[in-house]
Length: 316
Length: 250
Image 1: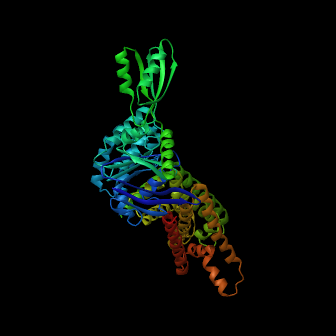
Image 2: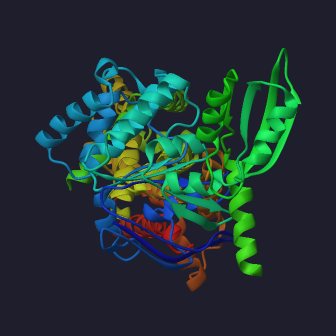
Image 3: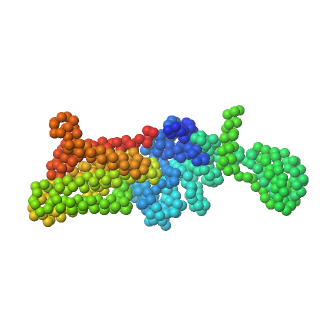
């Protein structure tokens, strides 16, 4: 669906995107993950034909975004950053206007607008002026607009930014429901969000793609160094001995928590999940276990991890 | 064509369903009214051979309206979409740049013409109360309105160009006002040049907005003037189109 080869975008004196390549297959939901200023929005603007690339080629559904821009635009639904809308228009009026702009006939635009309003939960506010709607509803209007002409590819730039948790949940569900029929490219800087929605993630940093994999695989790579915290009520000495006996534990630290409990921070060797073993140990010895968690990785950790890896590869 | 109509409808709605649109219309109506008062004082009681339309044009309220209303109507066309970000949603739909420019220009021109309707009422009042049956000749009225359309088209296309260049409405308004003032000032130059028939002189005389308008207000339609306005309007529309396309060159 999307083929990006050696895409570079330079603004005056600054490289926003530095020679990235990736491909997205039909029906996938792909997350473009990265901190602010990583080049996500620029990449999306180029994909949506709004900006030209400095060099490299981008093809969407087999059409070049620069030379066959009209064909590409017919096939994409794009929701830019901050979801700009005509605030003085009414919801239904706006969606009909957008449907007509995207080349839908009169009758078809009517039925499609009704369908997407239903799909995005906008039926109750169809006569309201967009400027008076809450941010969550506006976001849904933007999504409905991106969907209205049944595009093959939907590009959403930060679709959940600035929403409250309930609104985020409903927007995520909506996006998940698009899988299969549409190809979706979403940008976000929230890792769990990408994990939840996407079948594949591209991690962008400083204009480059550092990693491209499924959330599970990325998580596994990360898990290699993630600590497991276990709080067990047992004598500290016995715990230390137990940890020494498990070969998969590289490092451990036992400190006293309140009461009889000891707080153990355990670092596994590459790629191991220690949790089942710890549970088994506590069960066998009859030690009460009140907490067993693996610290989750924040996006920052992943960047640190991935950048470290790529530096090592370069050096090696 | 369908896309053009859809765009034009939304542009018209944005102009006529907003408070700004009505503020512009009210302000212009006030200026036309003031011009009308001045005109009535000038008319006095003595008979005069000068057509009423020319007298109105001579009050200079006319130029005030054109110079200010042009930038005010056009400043939002592209600049507002850019600053609000809707330019991105608009240009990523399968619309052509030409359709966008055509829709924005034509609706601004329609708004400008609606804005001038109160003048017709003023002229009718004069026509009704005058003792001379020939005071309000249909020819002079048509000529005046033709002039208004042509001058308007030029200033609106100029404003479109300024707006397509700018990111904020304020800078769009300033650019188009300055460009408009330059054209306007050329008119002074023409009026004050020595009447020696040199080529510079005849060249500059094409830019004599005052003399063009005076002719139109007398009911004289000079094809040179018509060609001048139409050509310059097309030039600015072409530049607007290039400015809209320019995001693909960057």
